[in-house]
Length: 496
Image (cartoon, rainbow, N blue to C red; front, side):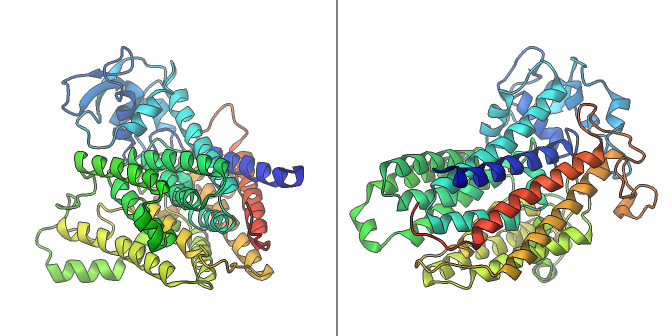
């Protein structure tokens, strides 16, 4: 591969990694949803280890982990007025004493994510937690870059377009975190493209690399959250449906052994791991006095919030970091823009696949909400369905008949500007929330100043000042998106 081809890829990948890493340090450990469970689950995933985990009663879901991981350490959760400085007032990150926490011993979640993160634990609890965030950032960019390089041209176009259109801001916040949703998003967000490239590969090198990517991302998804397994089975069947002529299915091409094997792993995990989404019972917290008609009508009328929530319509973290309209508007504009550009080229297979995936995104949350007597905004969160949304966008941008999807300069300019602006404001608001704390809904005047260096209560001593860090993250993201959209505008050549 020539230097003129390698250089843009390298610059885009490095810039994307820098941007994700800035997001990793934009908030403290414990800021991801339910980190009072996920962090202790990581520390206890290898069982009893001196100084790391002391299971109080084997198998009961409770254990002792370092004090900074206890639920009380997440003092800012649900309270946006508390900056991350409250942690330093309550405990010392170097405290080696063990305190009671909830863990994953009863197997509420697949253990693969926790077990892998546990390998990164060192002597310092804070450094360990942050290393896990950077590792997930690196893993996402590494897998995405390799998959894009070895994908067929039309799949590469769809994969890169998907990640540009969907990641801001929820995926950018979740991927560099210690929440297992990180692997759901990474895994399923890449698996569909790796599998389709594998099935279309003719050369041995591409077959081996795409096969390895398919297996890796599939296993990552299966080992993240329980709902990722049925998602993966659905996606596998759809990708085979998109790719496979009837004749090849009848002949039982050896290539199908890999997705079948990954699908069986997913099926086993689904059948042996309790559902965290309440497929058959719903989630707790609803009002049983609500009528069937009330539940269905209200939730159907507000269902788009689950889509909008992935691109800025819902607060991040513990629902205490609302995004500004500049993020939600321009992120949604980017999503819709890419979607309609993708619909320029369709086939009946593509249309049926889109209907099936959107049907799942539509019906599953409504069913779970109905069973739990919940309304939209109670229990069910957009991040649970974000992986399926990424697959939906991937297929929307996919060409199945070798007819290229093209951007005009004006379209590319608007999409680039929209996603860059949305990202810059999302990162700024996220950092401000943890640096100084903010009044509810960001209505205060003294804590919403554009200058992140003003009234700093919490920040990392080894990083540049907050405003410089924000500028670095925003610029790095803009550079990565520029290279991607510039690539998407070029005519597709029918060669790897």
